[in-house]
Length: 194
Ligand code: 5GP
Image (cartoon, rainbow, N blue to C red; front, side, top):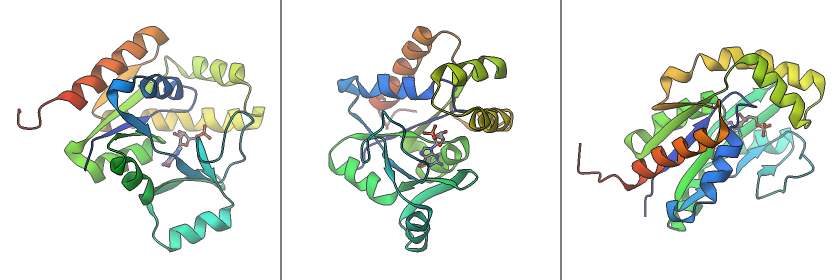
């Protein structure tokens, strides 16, 4: 079967992952997370095969050569992230819709690939200052990594208009409700109706 596709993108620290996790917990939506391949080190609370398929840069590059990726990006210098084509088949074969959590350029690419079958959502942080505060609070990245992420965020914000919808994550509860509503409407809409 060919299910639908929901794509969430944002500058990191915008709260996208929290929203994605919330949606995955709503069983009626029948969403399954697309596990990406990546070359950054595994964080303590992450599992191989659940959060990412962690691999070396060499392994990643040989998969690029073999044309196994639907899309991939060097999101940070020497940190490659990509969606394996096999993930799409795996999830659709399970009878589920796919939920992607990818960077903004990956989000634009996936929307282009899947067209009407996809809903792309950009999660906007309230401000760059708030983004910095959140990354520091999260405590998973070193100060220079945080700086890298912040520097990139200004550039990433410019992509918002290329997405179907935008959620401004000022208040998490409201953002979660808004995400739930738009995804539910998209997944249940009748394809024959305009
Ligand atoms: P993190 O290191 O915080 O887990 O992820 C960094 C960024 O890479 C996030 O914006 C995340 O959404 C993005 N990302 C994760 N997987 C993929 C992927 O398969 N493709 C692309 N283009 N970006 C990804």
